[in-house]
Image (cartoon, rainbow, N blue to C red; front, top):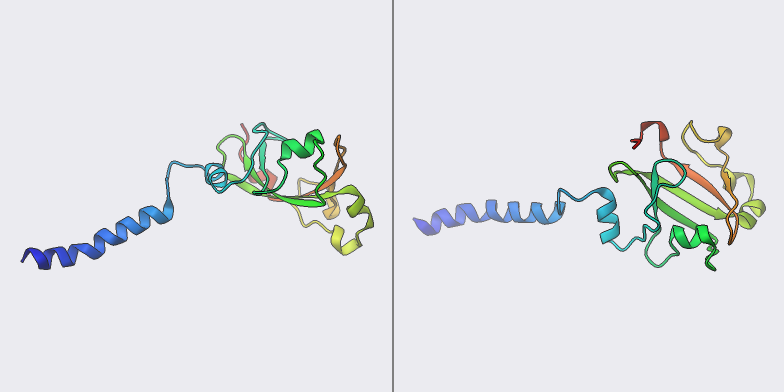
Length: 146
């Protein structure tokens, strides 16, 4: 009888264990999970509004790009998070200005939210190391402010 009961309970126990592993720590924020995956979120201060930015593993951090510490990557995809609760806001693409200026019109199209520049244009950033253009792919009006 005990063996039968154990055989019936075992699948339920396994399902609970697998679900808890799949979802990870429910208290972790989107940004916590991004950091745990190796993304570099320095500097952890709001930039361009109430947003935190993270660079992918192996790429220069936003701090490196902003300060011009020899980091002039051609382009980079950043994950952007709301400062208030570290929830995922969207994606930002940075393209070095010299590449942007030699790109064609189709490559320059940036389908972005309405609160950004009209006509799908990229925003210009004059930075110490190299100038960049940014395309924001998220709805700023729906994000959380501190």
